[in-house]
Length: 198
Image (cartoon, rainbow, N blue to C red; front, side, top):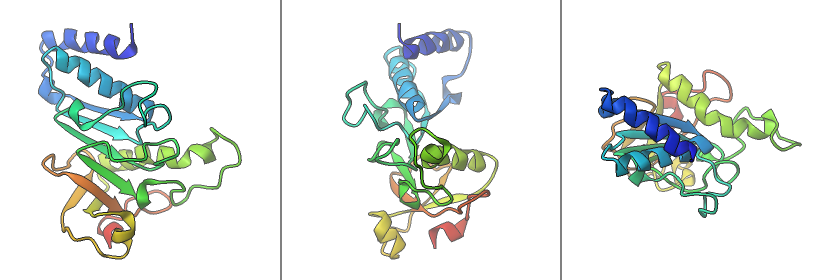
């Protein structure tokens, strides 16, 4: 039996004991994003719709295209938000949520990360890990504002045709849709607040 089924079974028991499904918010990093997407899909087949799934640099290898398993997608929960920090490396190279945040363009090398000489070292994984570092700061109250835009290049040139802003973190407006771009600092605190969208 798969881990997703086991987790789903445990959650169904809790839901039947009184856990309110409306209080569920899944947050996963890398492979955990796809695992939680599978859990949400499994719960959906049992009549429980997960309100929110947050993906922190969803794993790329084996999922785009879906060779290993079905990747997490907007259909997995009522609202799916993704934070991309190593797109095309260890992280998904494409939008895969209702809202996708692309800090610093969403690719390696994120500001403050050093060049890597060996695979799977802290230097190599630095950009991939930045997603959960940004999220943890947002949960602690730091403000990460993203500006809806056609691309990161358009964002950098100030050519965004949309004025919508989104807050990366727990308090996002779940009615929003699209790709949102921002800049961060190279070290903690990473949040630049409104300066991150200037």
